[in-house]
Image (cartoon, rainbow, N blue to C red; front, side, top):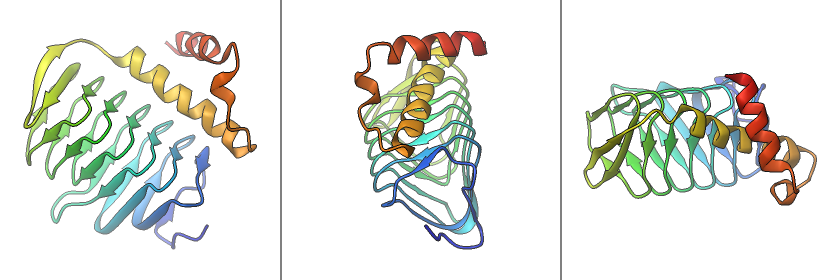
Length: 185
């Protein structure tokens, strides 16, 4: 895959061949990009943290004044749109959510599926957010749960690199990841 001189994805665990990445993009060690995800950064830049997964059909773009920056151990799930925003560490952004320019999501957050965050929304650490427009509905430290989810995708990425597409069906797959996460804390 040839993404251009300003794209640095050399340390990723997995990049599906259908992924498109353009502009100034840096993905940290063991991150992964799943089928049909797209990243564009014609101005500003995009950064993806360590062990973060960008799932199927996700779209990441930049704002006119803001880049898009995603922390470590995050899961950007299916059909999510991130546009010129900042996502903290250990976050999960649920299916089909949209996070707009200037938004800042704190660490350890869960953004529920189908949530829309309008421009400039600030979400504090440890928040669970849902709705259109999105609002904090609960406060809870989700770091461990979100880290486990990111580790699922990391281990799955390693399996996909080997052509193994059913690793989650193995008996001990989930138990092994939970043990791995507990050792990391």
